[in-house]
Image (cartoon, rainbow, N blue to C red):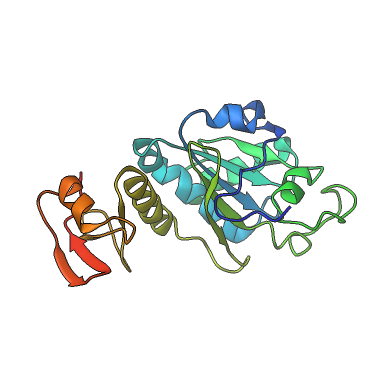
Amino acid sequence: MTLQINSIAPDFEAQTTEGRIRFHDWIGEGWCVLFSHPKDFTPVCTTELGNLAKIKPEFDRRGVKVIGLSVDPVDRHASWAQDIAETQGFAPNYPMIGDTELSVSKLYNMLPAEVEGTSDGRTAADNATVRTVFVIGPDKRIKLTLAYPMSTGRNFDELLRVIDSMQLTAKHKVATPVNWKDGDDVIILASVSDEDAKKQFPQGWTTMKPYLRVLPQPR
C-alpha cells in the first residue's frame, strides 16, 4: 500500500521508551507527528532529537503529540538519550519506538516490504530511507510527509509553520500562500463563492484575480 496525503495512517502496536502502545489509541483525538531515524547514535539524528525535546512545548501548545522511531531496541534508545542530553542539553521527552523487526518502517513504506531480518547487523546506510516525518490529523489521516537524506538535519521550525497552516485551514475555508507564517494574510479557497465568502468573511477581502482573494488571517 502506497501512503499518500489523506491516506489513513496505518495502526500498529509497538514497544516504546514509555511502554507498549497501540498507535491510534495513543494519538487519541488530536494531531500527531511521527518522525523516524535509521539508527541510534547517528550524528544528525542526535541533534534533531535534542532540538525537538527543547521545542516540544511549541507542539504541546498546538495540541500535537510527538513520537519518534528508530530501528534499534528501546534499551539502546535509553543509552542514546544520555548522549543526546550531554551533547544537546535536552534528552527526548517524548516516546521513542523500537522498531527492531522493521515492521513499522515497512508499514509506512520507509523500507521495502521484501527486506528480510531484523535491525541486527543493519547499518544506518541500510536504513537510509527511514528518515520521514508524518503529520497525522485527528481523523487519523496523513496530512503531510517530509523525507530527508541522512546528511541533512530537519527544520522543525518549518514543521511548526506547516502545522499552523494545516490547523488554520482545517478550521476556516482558506489556504495559505507561499512563505506564509502565523499572522500573515491568507487566501479564500477557490471553491468558496463570493456570496458564501461574504457570509464567512464579513470584514471583506482584496480581489487580485477572481481566483485570488486575499484577506487577513481569521482567528
